[in-house]
Image 1 (cartoon, rainbow, N blue to C red):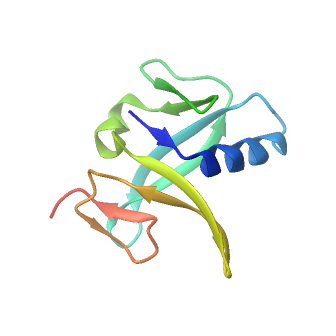
Image 2: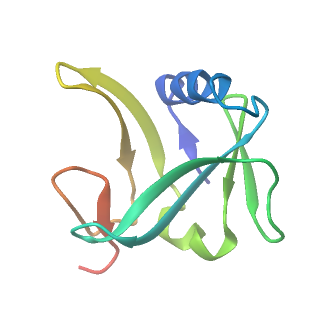
Length: 109
């Protein structure tokens, strides 16, 4: 399961409205990289691929590739703004370690 805070859902809707395809799906994923092993990816996609999981979160369709679900199952995505600007915050129960920036994580302790 994937969870979006109301603030994250609102920001994703705002970003999607500026996208060339305003009905695009929100794709959440991971890829190798960052300073802790894996880095989160956020993008818009027109259609789910075979085997993708699609979650309904606060009125948004969130797509996750089947092979990536073990990395982010249970993740809550939040959005907040501070004096340095706004950004997404990842609360991942599978992460054993995280980078100081919060965008990179490892599932191995």
